[in-house]
Image (cartoon, helix red, strand yellow):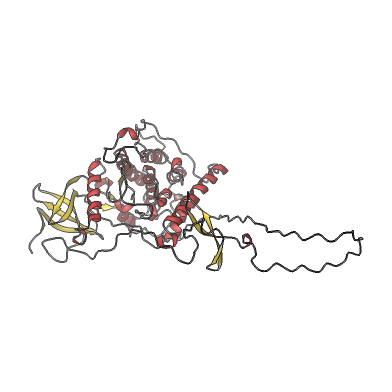
Length: 496
């Protein structure tokens, strides 16, 4: 059969495909090298939004360089279709490795995480936040040499992202709590990296394969599980590192991904990483739109020796009541904001896993079924974008409301709902305790008074009964412990 060409690229093998494009192992006829060629699907070739996102991914990936990041060779357009030529990485992704081999020894897991941390530090120093750190985006070459791929959801701190609080992108199983409300910075990537470290050690995700509702609440409210419970080879100090990386409050995490990796190395070896330069903590800047990112907006931390983190949570002193209260307040605020802006009942049913394959995954190649002059098309699937549902006519729990209009409680869905302020100026219908609602039936009849024969009656007519319209203050406290469903020890599968 004849060769299939896309411009000056010969398409040798289909490596992967998603809803908006395909990734091919291709031969560049002009340079004489093999590349991973990502091509925007013909279905979306004329759609401005998809073209903008594809172009943005290419430009962001080209802005950062490092030994653990895939190089960008070329970006352009052929026959109306955008393409991105990247370094071809022969090997398997981390998700495939974990599925095949199961739990990794702590030393090997830490070596992999240290390389991912270096890639993240390089990206953070350039002002980029990856936002989708997960095993399927971590490629392993010979000798476990790591490349972090897929900057499709990345964004620059000094530029607005293409998504808003109602369009949450990323992968739920590795998403930091603050991401659910549309926030997040470099420390969100560190949270995801700590989740990856846990999965390397246990061959399962931190909160298992729970459904969307359980995963979301676990990220917001449940303490990170101990890897040693599933892998006895994990030292207690390494569990403490994971717990710090997965802290609910970003300020309680390490200063950088590199510092997290250095602490993990020290926990496994008992040694400090010699002279590790940590990355800048990326914070928002005040640069005007269109201006280049200013390095001064993120001061580079000095070269430091990692802090020793001996002892796991089980042996460490319990967190102070003030810290627990702070965590609960932040988690509650994030959850309330999500309920108002996104609509929990609608959002939880959506899959947040976005397409995979923005770089080569040679471990499971797919052969094209036919030879054509342009890449084979696949049936497109909708991009996982979550929209705000329309407000219902009949009030329902957790739906937005206007306290100025809906000042009194209403009965709906077999419960009493009140319009309660949540975050900022927003408010939503919240279930109320039945005792908090004054009775609306006719006043109770007074029982006839029996004369007190034991005491003489005092003179004067009986005083009028006082009407008491008491307003109870019902507290709706939420407590309890989150549970990690599914205690099976099966091997973790690839992200879906």
